[in-house]
Image (cartoon, rainbow over the protein chains, first blue to last red):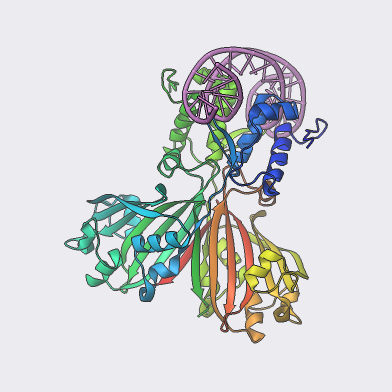
Length: 257
Length: 257
DNA sequence: GAGTGGTCTAGACCACCAC
DNA sequence: TGGTGGTCTAGACCACTCT
């Protein structure tokens, strides 16, 4: 196949090279998981300098189409996402708490799920958390951090905050929150839940998040802020979640009412 | 301020330079909208080659922290997102159809909204659309494309599909769908709505989307698939939406039931 | 015209992987 | 050991913006 850069074109050579490779990926000529031509081969094919073909590959990486492995080569990316079902998580009638919901969803997607409990402790609300919970900065809160993994690979990192007067003396302060999870404990503790709100943002990860979630280049993250409101309108939990953007589909059900 | 690369460190010079600039951005020393030092200045400050400082800046661009403008310089990115309220859009009691909802949300965020009606036509369902609507490929459908803009800048591109037997002869086939929007017309036409489902994905944009939405580097897109289900369980509309990831917060309300 | 970022080259040395 | 990608250099020419 005669791949060729048009030197008279206004389009920079590295974009032309990326265009050709992208087309081969999207047409399936380069299937998911397949190896890309080596830099050396691309240099010969296109007659460009190494810096130019590396620019082309960097572009494809930034689009999330390609990953490179030092000493091995470049590959077409392929990973199927897991469907995260908001309604199954929060409607009491069919509620599955965080861990249980994740386990069920992951198995439905054919992946082996697991959960790390990284940290459960009493702490103080910083300004951000205080704003979420409607308390004052410095007020005591329960902090629960955990990490969700698929096939041994971390894909989600979540931190829950509960005002200390609600958490105190309950099983929420243990690693294992007991049957029904944290929401069951909150409801038992005289705070019947009325509704949840969830704010979804998308952005590129910080270098820290790239490491923690082992993200490839060109993979964004979802950032979720969930607040649980009791029937009196108080926020009884806030949960800050960062999820690998290529591993999840967030699925919401909305009544027409 | 003596910024300096440690040549004995294992961390590559370009990452060290990016770390320092990132820290200055996140601490506020470089405020949103502020100009970065020019490449020339960074070369002098850090004593590295141009390629190295350009690698550092490219990294910050891929993280969405920085934009560059040819001939002008590099700048810290700053654009506030608009809150998109799913519940206000779909609960009949307070429903605002697509255009009206967008206008209200944008004004709440202090931006000047507008909407393009790019295309309204009869067409055939391809395999993907047929799957969404539960019809056969090739079946006739109404296709409505439109573009949403904030302050004259496109931020969202949406395409709705409605099975032709539902759309035929209604105001849905006009540019102006009339009061209450497309859902009001569907309900009038003997298809009372029961629920909506919304699937949210996040990924990096294609070069096409970068152009259409005028996205900066390091900005992901939301991809929404919404399906409207009538009381008989039929999908009466599917809407495929691509949104600039840095301009929206998707906000969902979930009853605890 | 001076200063900026965008593209491209040709070469060097290194770290990692597979054989 | 040979091939791969990762980093870095020093230079060139171009296109764009501002004044």
